[in-house]
Image (cartoon, rainbow, N blue to C red; front, side, top):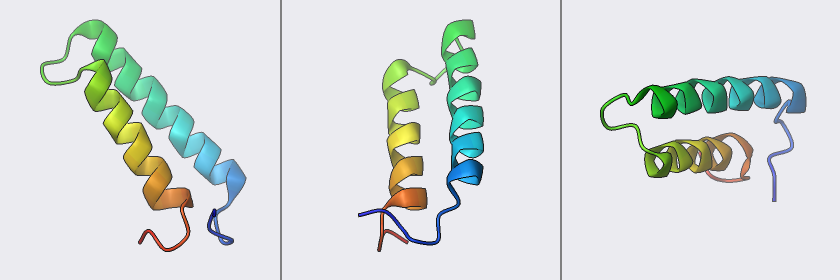
Length: 55
């Protein structure tokens, strides 16, 4: 269940920025930034920002 107070526009902007930034780091070979790390960051973001009772 998603949080009722989540602003979909703001969450979409933040998620897109996080996705783009992490993808650039993966593509440029930043040490420690793997596809797996990127996935963990994105899943954690969604969990913290959207899932009811996660905070």
